[in-house]
Length: 174
Image 1 (tube, rainbow, N blue to C red):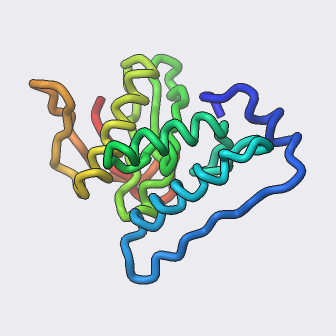
Image 2 (image 1 turned 45 degrees about the horizontal axis):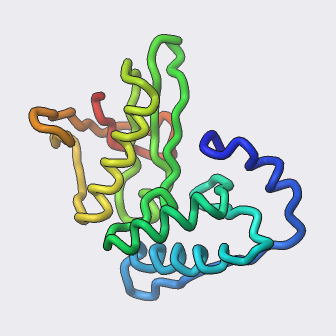
């Protein structure tokens, strides 16, 4: 986990684990996932809690709880707890790629940014903002749409085979 350098050390030191699952039985998967985040955040208050495996990555208890509590208190979906945001260099050695992992199981499309010349932090922020927008407002983006978060921004969205994710994904030209 690039956001927690001590993740591997903590994961290796664990002695036991607790599994949290919420069945959605006819309810929205996003609502069930949000409830699971709230329950997990509560369990992480235990003094011996060393981390949590969520969205394919091992997170620190503090990071997980802080994001969960802040977002839920403000009526937002806990996106940082539900979705992993990956970054990796493009093969050309000059640009960066980014992707989401976890949106599909919440009823949305995975999103990728390919061959961006922007800073990694900016790509990360764009992906987080796009995922938050999609989940908080139940927006289903599609090819031909645009997205932007500042006045005058309009990044084109296309659809195609995923590079870092399984199946097709939305591509934001950023």
